[in-house]
Image 1 (cartoon, rainbow, N blue to C red):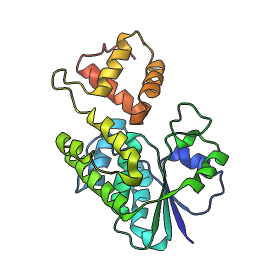
Image 2: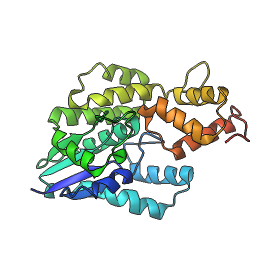
Image 3: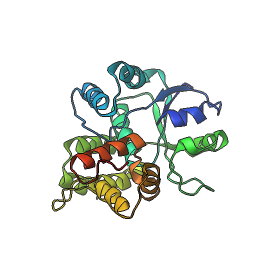
Image 4: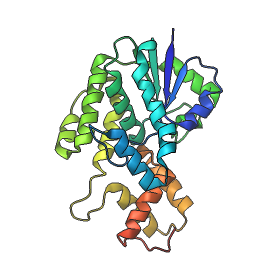
Length: 257
């Protein structure tokens, strides 16, 4: 049996390579939950935004991201595809995009490994925190996704692109089947829409409230945010970008952080 493992990033890859689990690997390195998305020219749009926002260059993006994504075009050679993802918004939006592609496959069985807690670990945040033994044990917990799960993921991806609050709220009344963590993530996504009164979204409000409490170092600010709001799965680069935008809006003093 030939298997493709789709891993949610390089931190997971580092541990995965120590497990001796057999199969080919696709490493997902995009953050589709942040920045623009589209039903057409997605990768051109993403490359341009990532390069401008985070100082990446197009050649690296091609090598690190698009080359891996192109592996999704060769699924016919695999008997099964196993997705290793996490509960946070970043992972869940990446997941529904991938599942929207996998729905067209006819031959592969699709499995999902997506824990939100790990026995014996407090404040579990990601698969990259696990040791090889812990990660390998998760293989026995893989859940086979049904066609209904894939269809729901494809609908969710379309709704995410359309970015309509009322449509997403209506979608949340659905039965999410094996993708029940997606419901929590989409609820968190709705909080990213700006408050009509303050014109701030929930993430911005949380960061500003922490700063008002007296946090003055970036390391402490990010650690406190991650502990409180792990549902978003934001990296330090993404939080840097948000802080920069808040400074540009003169909501944070430029000399801070």
